[in-house]
Length: 446
Image 1: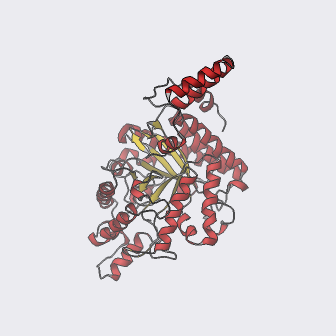
Image 2: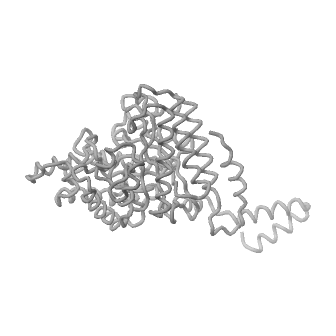
């Protein structure tokens, strides 16, 4: 509508009374001030970035309430199980979960993505494409891990087996971190994933905002070198390598959070003495160029010797707070508590205790969120749809079967969404949403 058409329309409406003019003015204001739906969509789905110790999206804070479901890719391969991927995202979205951590690997196993070094099963890769595209439909971002420390889904031991089959002189699975040929296998996989063109969305993975971050490895450990030097050198090399191909996305290591030799004063915070001997070093590892945020896991039911609920809750609080303090005071980056849960296989398990531990994690991190701190978010281990019990390691949460747990998760999502909706420091509209945050976040609903 040009100027003359608008003027003519207003003159006509004037004869119908002032109410018509008011309605038209409201309509024109709405048209001028609000972007089109497609513009809003493009603006909202942009890369997650880091600003100091906060995640941001479009300049606004982005605190995470998320989950793990590691098996999405292998389920998406088969048409008979692909629907479970959609179910997980639907159910997660219904309680406000915004980030999912899952595997972008399956090495030399059943339904392997990588059948041998640099040899891929295209059907499995298309299944990963489907996972990424389906996540976007439900506005869920993905943390994609490149390899496992453990033997499940191949892991570093599979890479070493490939190396031995090629005639390499390898004596330990930890040669994964140091042998040039094995490292070249890993780099090739990273390069292949980053440059993959999604067959569903036609977006290259390294350009897709659906991906929250890349994870170098799930729970890396190098027990053959307790000094931590071997793993440190590997992290330094691989973090820079990922960034050299994809400078847009965030990168994290995948660590459990154990303190090491570089911080002897913090060893007392570890859950046990064994934790300081596995070759990881929380502070030192996360000071590497190319690493954007820290990761920590929380499993008091299997880590600490005291079996009581009180002891596990106390450890959880102190473990979280210690790492938030380190992220803010030493690292200058967010920390995500990227695995936590309670196993139904624990002799002392009750759903009441599981809810208590989840609430403890949420509330402790929320104390950081309230002040804009470095507690970047949490990822529950793990969310399952109904009918997948045979994949359960004891930690699965099925929302439809656990209404009390579902409610706790939903409340935490609402709290974080309120905070995330605050205008950024660049806001031009004088937003008043801080009052809404005060009323919502500071009410102890858990």
